[in-house]
Length: 148
Image (cartoon, rainbow, N blue to C red; front, side):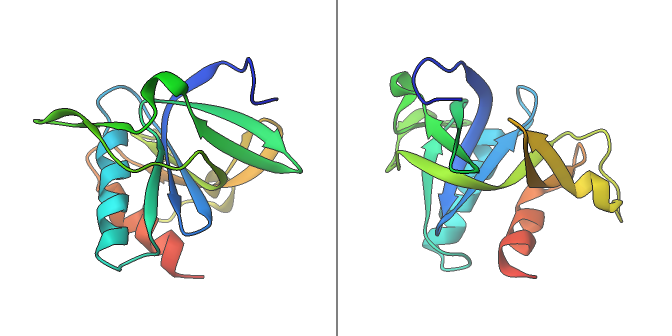
Protein backbone atom coordinates (compact mmCIF):
# COMPACT_ATOMS: atom_id res chain seq x y z
CA UNK A 1 0.00 0.00 0.00
CA UNK A 2 1.08 3.53 -0.55
CA UNK A 3 0.05 6.58 1.44
CA UNK A 4 -1.66 8.29 -1.48
CA UNK A 5 -4.96 6.99 -2.74
CA UNK A 6 -5.46 4.31 -0.09
CA UNK A 7 -8.91 3.85 1.30
CA UNK A 8 -9.29 4.71 4.94
CA UNK A 9 -10.49 2.17 7.50
CA UNK A 10 -12.86 2.64 10.41
CA UNK A 11 -10.35 2.77 13.29
CA UNK A 12 -8.46 5.09 15.61
CA UNK A 13 -4.72 5.25 16.20
CA UNK A 14 -2.44 6.70 18.86
CA UNK A 15 1.33 7.10 18.98
CA UNK A 16 2.63 6.02 22.42
CA UNK A 17 6.31 6.86 22.68
CA UNK A 18 7.57 5.38 19.42
CA UNK A 19 4.86 2.69 19.08
CA UNK A 20 1.55 2.94 17.34
CA UNK A 21 -1.65 1.50 18.76
CA UNK A 22 -4.29 0.75 16.12
CA UNK A 23 -7.78 0.50 17.63
CA UNK A 24 -10.45 -1.36 15.66
CA UNK A 25 -14.04 -2.21 16.49
CA UNK A 26 -17.63 -1.63 15.52
CA UNK A 27 -19.28 1.75 15.82
CA UNK A 28 -19.89 2.62 19.47
CA UNK A 29 -17.39 0.07 20.82
CA UNK A 30 -15.14 2.68 22.43
CA UNK A 31 -12.36 3.38 19.92
CA UNK A 32 -12.33 7.13 20.61
CA UNK A 33 -12.61 6.55 24.35
CA UNK A 34 -9.61 4.20 24.37
CA UNK A 35 -7.60 6.63 22.23
CA UNK A 36 -8.33 9.48 24.66
CA UNK A 37 -7.67 7.25 27.69
CA UNK A 38 -4.22 6.43 26.26
CA UNK A 39 -3.52 10.13 25.75
CA UNK A 40 -4.53 10.82 29.37
CA UNK A 41 -2.38 7.90 30.61
CA UNK A 42 0.56 9.45 28.77
CA UNK A 43 -0.09 12.84 30.34
CA UNK A 44 -0.27 11.15 33.78
CA UNK A 45 3.11 9.48 33.23
CA UNK A 46 1.73 5.92 33.28
CA UNK A 47 3.11 5.36 29.79
CA UNK A 48 5.30 7.44 27.45
CA UNK A 49 3.69 10.51 25.94
CA UNK A 50 0.71 9.55 23.78
CA UNK A 51 -0.47 11.58 20.80
CA UNK A 52 -3.47 11.09 18.52
CA UNK A 53 -2.77 9.91 14.98
CA UNK A 54 -6.39 9.71 13.89
CA UNK A 55 -9.85 9.10 15.27
CA UNK A 56 -12.67 7.31 13.48
CA UNK A 57 -10.79 6.95 10.15
CA UNK A 58 -7.13 6.14 9.49
CA UNK A 59 -5.12 5.10 6.48
CA UNK A 60 -2.78 2.12 6.62
CA UNK A 61 0.34 1.78 4.50
CA UNK A 62 3.24 -0.63 4.45
CA UNK A 63 6.70 0.86 4.48
CA UNK A 64 10.03 -0.95 4.93
CA UNK A 65 8.31 -4.01 6.40
CA UNK A 66 6.24 -1.94 8.86
CA UNK A 67 2.56 -1.14 9.07
CA UNK A 68 2.11 2.63 9.26
CA UNK A 69 -1.09 4.33 10.42
CA UNK A 70 -1.84 7.87 9.24
CA UNK A 71 -4.68 10.22 9.99
CA UNK A 72 -7.00 11.29 7.19
CA UNK A 73 -6.73 14.98 6.26
CA UNK A 74 -10.41 15.80 6.77
CA UNK A 75 -10.26 14.64 10.43
CA UNK A 76 -6.75 15.80 11.34
CA UNK A 77 -6.43 16.65 15.01
CA UNK A 78 -10.06 15.88 15.83
CA UNK A 79 -11.37 13.35 18.35
CA UNK A 80 -14.88 12.56 19.49
CA UNK A 81 -15.40 12.90 23.24
CA UNK A 82 -18.76 11.38 24.08
CA UNK A 83 -20.83 14.03 25.85
CA UNK A 84 -18.70 16.92 24.52
CA UNK A 85 -18.72 16.28 20.78
CA UNK A 86 -15.82 16.72 18.38
CA UNK A 87 -12.77 18.34 19.98
CA UNK A 88 -9.37 19.35 18.61
CA UNK A 89 -6.20 17.90 20.10
CA UNK A 90 -2.48 17.71 19.41
CA UNK A 91 -1.74 15.08 16.79
CA UNK A 92 1.10 13.38 14.95
CA UNK A 93 1.20 12.55 11.26
CA UNK A 94 1.83 8.82 11.53
CA UNK A 95 2.99 5.88 13.63
CA UNK A 96 4.42 2.43 13.05
CA UNK A 97 1.78 0.05 14.38
CA UNK A 98 3.11 -2.06 17.26
CA UNK A 99 -0.22 -3.54 18.35
CA UNK A 100 -3.78 -3.88 17.11
CA UNK A 101 -6.56 -3.64 19.68
CA UNK A 102 -9.78 -5.31 18.59
CA UNK A 103 -12.74 -4.10 20.66
CA UNK A 104 -15.85 -6.27 21.03
CA UNK A 105 -13.76 -9.22 19.83
CA UNK A 106 -15.78 -12.43 19.67
CA UNK A 107 -12.64 -14.50 20.32
CA UNK A 108 -11.56 -12.66 23.50
CA UNK A 109 -10.75 -15.10 26.31
CA UNK A 110 -9.35 -14.96 29.83
CA UNK A 111 -6.28 -16.89 28.69
CA UNK A 112 -6.21 -16.49 24.92
CA UNK A 113 -4.29 -18.99 22.79
CA UNK A 114 -1.11 -17.61 21.18
CA UNK A 115 -2.69 -17.41 17.72
CA UNK A 116 -5.40 -15.03 19.06
CA UNK A 117 -2.66 -12.60 20.10
CA UNK A 118 -1.54 -11.99 16.50
CA UNK A 119 -3.26 -10.66 13.41
CA UNK A 120 -2.37 -10.20 9.76
CA UNK A 121 -2.76 -6.70 8.35
CA UNK A 122 -1.58 -5.92 4.83
CA UNK A 123 0.47 -9.12 4.85
CA UNK A 124 2.29 -8.23 8.08
CA UNK A 125 1.91 -10.11 11.37
CA UNK A 126 1.13 -7.66 14.18
CA UNK A 127 0.61 -8.34 17.91
CA UNK A 128 -3.08 -8.20 18.80
CA UNK A 129 -5.15 -7.58 21.92
CA UNK A 130 -8.68 -9.01 21.65
CA UNK A 131 -11.02 -7.24 24.09
CA UNK A 132 -14.42 -8.74 24.83
CA UNK A 133 -17.60 -6.70 24.87
CA UNK A 134 -18.06 -5.01 28.23
CA UNK A 135 -14.40 -5.37 29.28
CA UNK A 136 -12.11 -2.42 29.90
CA UNK A 137 -9.51 -2.18 27.16
CA UNK A 138 -7.19 0.36 28.82
CA UNK A 139 -5.68 -2.00 31.44
CA UNK A 140 -4.91 -4.56 28.74
CA UNK A 141 -3.21 -2.01 26.50
CA UNK A 142 -1.25 -0.55 29.44
CA UNK A 143 -0.14 -4.09 30.35
CA UNK A 144 1.01 -4.70 26.77
CA UNK A 145 2.94 -1.42 26.71
CA UNK A 146 4.58 -1.83 30.14
CA UNK A 147 5.33 -5.57 30.45
CA UNK A 148 7.32 -8.16 28.56
